[in-house]
Image (cartoon, rainbow, N blue to C red; front, side):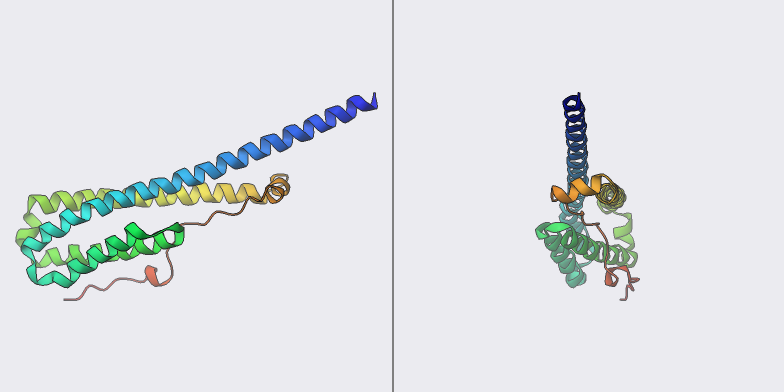
Length: 182
């Protein structure tokens, strides 16, 4: 009779380990998928930028340095790896895009240009999608990291070498208000 209890206890423990492992793997895969959604939106924005730059170039020939900064920030974003690098490059690009839209205030014809307005709308839509993707990613990371910290998952997570995921966050420098000066 004791053997039956031992077999049942071993089966319950095995089932608990199996269930916990699968839930951790599922959560980890969700974190990766959420991060890939950020990448998709960042790529979308980066693909729109050359069109925006070309449209603005036609109107603002003497704003060459600003356009070069936008191009440099886009390149930095495209070559960034890891959550922290992508967050930093993303924030740098967002700041330079704010400047380019501020330049449009000096060029009434540019503000009325259909291509510019279309690109501006696409970028605005993309910025919203990036913000949502970042929020979704950070929520997914929070759920995953919480799973790693609660009992009994904590025990198995440590045993199976699961580590916390990194949040997609801005640095203090990147949170400062941007002053656009001409």
